[in-house]
Image 1 (cartoon, rainbow, N blue to C red):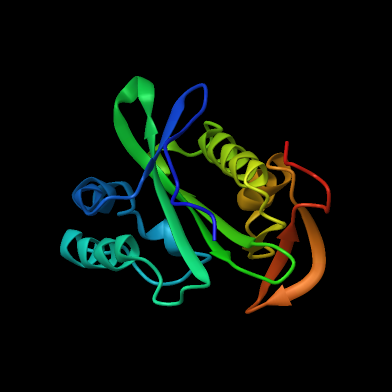
Image 2: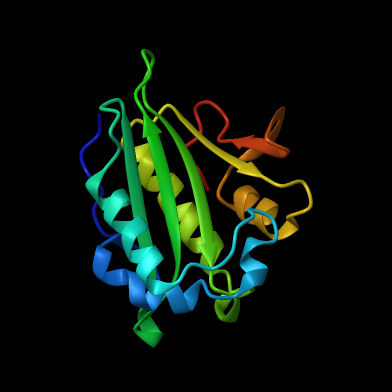
Length: 174
């Protein structure tokens, strides 16, 4: 399995490995119920998010699966604005990563998700991840645009009502 994630930087962003201490600030970032329109659930209270982050930071109980999670810091504002994640599974022909992203409502439509997702896909590709996958609700146009910008293309495969997007074989992202 690939080593634990590091800080990933872009022109405007720092993707910081998730820490339990991020929970209080992230509870505010993720507090808009509209963020859950496509993924279900409701905003988590800071205590619940802290408990979730403790589980995520502890890592997957499956030795063939790694949970890599980053918070996104918008450098100019010196604040957290969202998350990106990759669940990386060991496979006989090489690791596969399933990725996801979420940006707090006040920071949407500023290209942050696109910049963060593209950086994540490029980072994973440099680490010989064989496939990068995302599952996106068919009505979530913003996430489809982010996936496209990150180099993923839609497939004809569905899972739990979401369309599978994948980095084309041999591609390294945007």
